[in-house]
Length: 292
Image 1 (cartoon, rainbow, N blue to C red):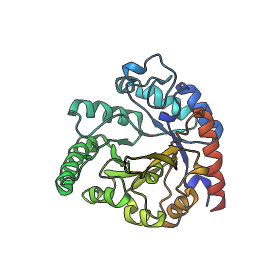
Image 2 (tube, one colour):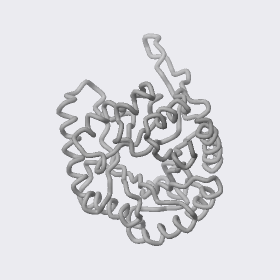
Image 3 (spheres, helix red, strand yellow):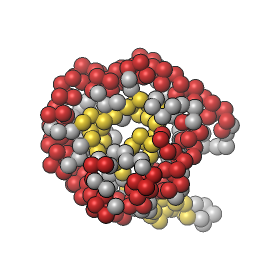
């Protein structure tokens, strides 16, 4: 398989210490072609603090800034030889229409094609799943209705803590939509924690709804014992060569199923600079792709 059949991408969330020009230059050097933008407001408590994936970012791209500068940012991405591919704002189904439209329009103007809209976490106690599912499906109908006229696709993430944490649970939402209007980010890292199934089963379940993949991972560690003497599971983010989910098996399953989608790197290994995380992961992924 040609490596370009499954292009490499990156989410800007993992490069907090670089400004846009630095991010793009690094991606071009590494052959990472798909750039996923991060339009988020830095939490007030994080402003001026050390760079952090989910906190302070050197490239402080807020949703309002993206709306104002989308054309210029798109130009920079294209000039560097990359393509805009998706946005990952801190945006939820429960947000008001004006907040949703601010982000959807920014995505459209950037030419990024798809925007992740998250759902609330499920309750911490047993709950009425059918009622919750209906609520989420109705929520995505509303969001798809806002995004479709602007040519933007909504993507949901198989994220732990949500009722889309596994491929089959995500499919319970997706089956109500056409794959052109709503798709899935298959987040492999989350499957270590919740929702993991065999790779070939996962791609068979989701099929055409797989929009792209988040490549990262976690491995089990020794958690703490509870009051009854039972050890609770614990996890730590790790390089993709060291994680519980065997990344080559996932990529092979995608290739065998014909789902040649972008592999968007999202490596949050602790105590390791973002540029090194991106470089090491890109190199490892190229070994996998070349071996297909």
